[in-house]
Length: 349
Ligand SMILES: Nc1ncnc2c1ncn2[C@@H]1O[C@H](COP(=O)(O)OP(=O)(O)OP(=O)(O)O)[C@@H](O)[C@H]1O
Ligand SMILES: [Mg+2]
Image (cartoon, rainbow, N blue to C red):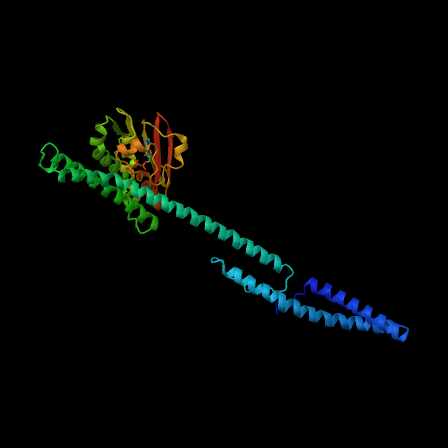
């Protein structure tokens, strides 16, 4: 029986009660009979002490501590991660302190939850604002071109084909934004299943460089690997997703690179990992922006990025993909000197 721990308070109260009762009875017997028998007073003291003890103990235990115990269990049950401690002893003297601890813990947790909900709510509002803002530009463009065509422009050979082409470009832009948003939401909800396979990342990088050479040549930017990488460098990762990462990073190095600049890609091999480094000598990023760089819609220079057709989703996607692989990505940058981004991939052999 776990309730037989005698709380000090019960003992003290019983003692006080017995002393007072004995004093009163001795006083009355002295008044009536002219004397008080010490043996009888002592006997009375013991009897009244035992009776007081049981009365106080039952009251104390049943009335107060059972209530505290119920409260304790209810508070515990409100904490989803913890199993209520049913072995809790009702009559431990420190049960009030324990209850206080539990209530403080619960209050702290609730405060944290409220804070998280507030953050989520402001994030949601900001996100919706960003999405509608980004979609507005191409939609208004399409609306403008279509209206001009309806208002007679369709018969003007100097603009009709050109406006249709521009509207088509805006549609492409909308599709791109929606695709990016879809990828992000899949990565965040965890519905995007990675399909890891063993493949040669050196070969993959060479193919990407070839595919992006046309884009980089327009800005006279050289895309180069640090070495020839003749031997295969086998990694274990989702090939399609890692391609997305590398394309995004090299594209950024071109978009934010300087005319006539250079992007250097290095692959370093370690015991269990491969580290890919993409280094450009472009406009660079000021220190204060680095911490927020991987946030969705974050752009250092909104005007410049939008000019380049950027939404600020590229790096957010890149980071999600790398984290989904349980790998890491880092950025260092100096304004006007350039940016270096490194990320890790698991070695495949
Ligand atoms: N290599 C780089 N050099 C300088 N600035 C960069 C570089 N890479 C990214 N940035 C800055 O970081 C911002 C975020 O990059 P991110 O790739 O997420 O978006 P974006 O390129 O603007 O748009 P998106 O990639 O969605 O088309 C960019 O707008 C740019 O300001
Ligand atoms: Mg980008």
